[in-house]
Image (cartoon, rainbow, N blue to C red; front, side, top):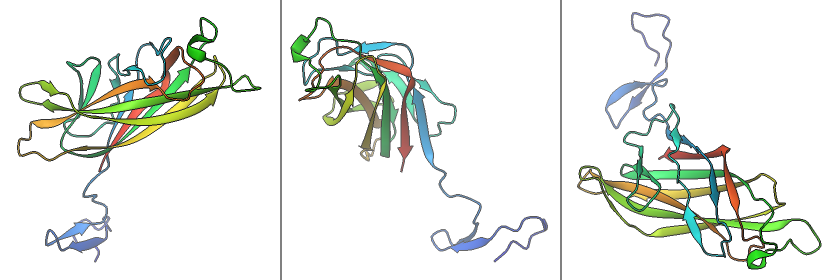
Length: 215
């Protein structure tokens, strides 16, 4: 039914919520979407003369967390394993990584078998990210190493040309009776198998960001 209260301007529709045994306004969201946005900062030149399967830390520079971020307990901390980690409380998340990348011409020529695709000036610039599922003790500040999940993204691009690589990763921080045992997600960027380009890539801060959505 409609609100019949003293404020006649409020015509919000109310529904009965059996779970809470109470009337709830339809304009009151029970769970507003919980998100976090992080922009890359500083310069990062990675994978210099790197062969397939090798990787390096992606979050070398402390990312800038947007003011609209509203995931309770989320923070970014330097990891004892190097770089920065995304600290997230127990729960389920979608982590989206978007990287604006640009590779100059390889040097020396043909390093590690670098060559354009046959009959073209394009290269298969394949990347992967290892999403490393560490844990963090929020009371003792101790990081514990976890397992990695590798996700690959092949991209066809010319050298000295911006190309966008995107990843989506479902991340679960398991329930624990100790609320201080939470997630510390670490990211490594690497060169994918069967690429045709095995040299430097620049991660350009403008256009590179991470979005985290909590379920």
